[in-house]
Image 1 (cartoon, each protein chain N blue to C red):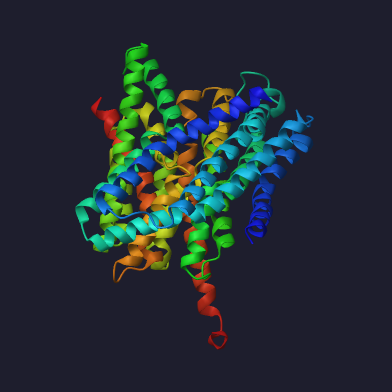
Image 2: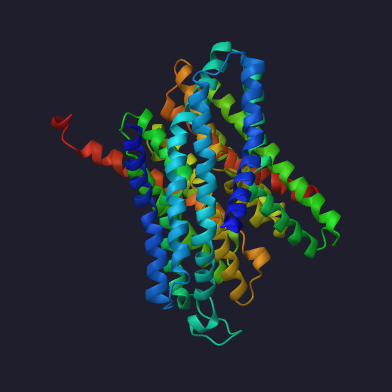
Length: 258
Length: 242
């Protein structure tokens, strides 16, 4: 219990240290530049403490349960025994099918659990007056992350160059930008960077590093990176798709409904 | 009332985490076919994650969102672009420099660099490289938020900036050292954290709402997207210059 408390204290402390510069900047600008007292200081303080403890609990829980298990599973799925190849021999890329399934389902599930995506989805629903559904947005993003991480795994297995995929992805986004409804563009661009944080980064990095370590010919230091950039890029594509489909459906719907 | 909201949110958080739990259990039991190690700890950990997510969401609506928006309104009323932009820069810089995930990643990146020929294999050289990387990323994010806020003020379409950055990344990549490309591509996603995202989003939306002729949805978003792209450009340049 005491060991646990000190561990929890540590994650609370590191959360505080991360927030400290932001807090100093906000308070500094509020009092020195805006020069007005905060509205509802007590409510904001309590809310801030909630956020602080929320993140600390969240990280602590991840550390206790999900991260060790996720890393263990990534390691188990990529051992030569599980893949059914003898050590050192290069397996064909289809031999890694369970790794792809794992990558896709982890990507999907972590995106749904990501607190910052939840925050943005709530905000979007609030300011769009419910026209953009929070669940729809999160679902589209989750599919994008799943797709991105699966491709990232495929890239590590086959050893294709990273920038080839990324630049192709950029091309797709540029083409979609020309056709997508303009109002959704900013939100769609944001959806990638927003999604990849507390849960996704450690789990996905562990998967990438584990895979690069066990696939012959890959170096974990060089090939282990790049997964995050897939997880940032592909939600943009799926959210733009979602917007496109939604606007087509709206056009086809008979006008009597509105 | 508050108690009701708390319980409702607790239930929602549980629903949010259900898929991740399902993935872990199904894979462990059906595909890897190993017993789940330490069920007690897994249950306790999940409980913590649910409580943490609930507190985070409740606190968000009480503090970070209203704070970001009220500051955006105050700056808009004050009418000083200089102070608004310096606030934007400090916010981006301050959030990135202390981000734990970025600290971990820059240490890792220094290890890679010292294995190649680019960097001496000593602790001081590595620490210097890691610190340099963190500073570059923090500068890049500060710069990105400034440019993004400037965009909201001027009303430029976001896709000019985004497509411009894509083009810059595509052009610089062939010249960047191979061992920094993966890191550069990943770094933008890593440096935007759980605290920064709601705050920056609220700032953008609040700003777009308080400037005449801007639409909060179409103009207010986009700050995070830019913050995820600019660091890639800066880090690749850092790799070339070193």
